[in-house]
Length: 191
Image 1: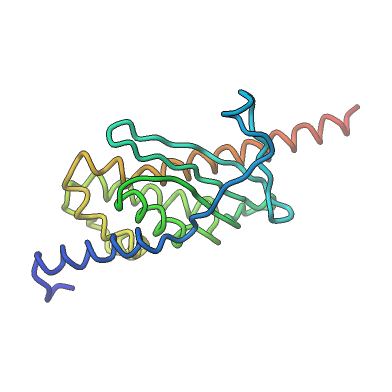
Image 2: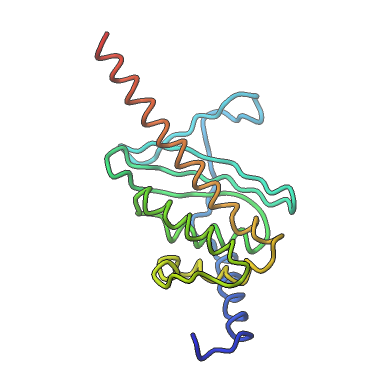
């Protein structure tokens, strides 16, 4: 890529973002038992994969109106692996492309690996266009590295991070659910 001028590189990045937003990976219709909006209660989130815990997180960017719900399924056994990521939402091409690329990066990875990618993506967004000075981290981000150009625009950074924040929150909820179930199981054994 060193042979490309900055204008050609920027155009290539834009094409990758537009393609990922037009053909989003992981996008689906999320269903749950009960509708919290309709009945004012909590929805029950179920896992499709056996031996998995499921959770979801809804994120909203009040600056531009982008919103997403990220649903994850995490294996119950160690190391906890992300078996599935599905999302539904609406927003600009940046938020939609970031979600699509994120799904490709994290599905099948362990939670620890996904959180490492989360941290690297955050650093990229904080770079204000300079990128990462860690070639290995940049390689690990794969197509997500195209968001380096987005990091120049503070108002767009939140768009790129929206799905990643949903991923982090839903993973935390899934792991907390597993911990809660394990604690309940242990307490039942004691009784």
